[in-house]
Image (cartoon, rainbow, N blue to C red; front, top):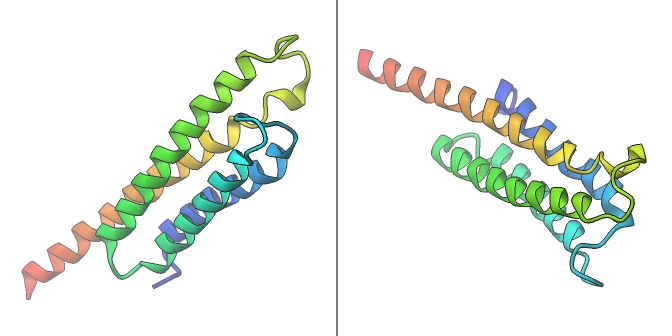
Length: 129
């Protein structure tokens, strides 16, 4: 079923990656390579694969864990980028980018919590049969 609550949380994590894609176009971490764009597209694809694999909850948890790992690495890279900016964090637009991977990690943790809850419910119903 696509209309589960974890689908909403995974979709919010996808929105975090899309917003990072939009706001992250003004800087570059590794020179001319569009690193942020590639990572954001990867996160969106992993999120949609996670949503579409609703019948296989273990795969869905695995995809969410991979997305959380990528988001954690991205959060570290963005924090490093902000700390090495000349002039510090005086402008509000300099500090918005790390918020989106953090939001995605929180949403994916909540989604995993609901997926595990569904897994426990299915196992308890199987015991009753």
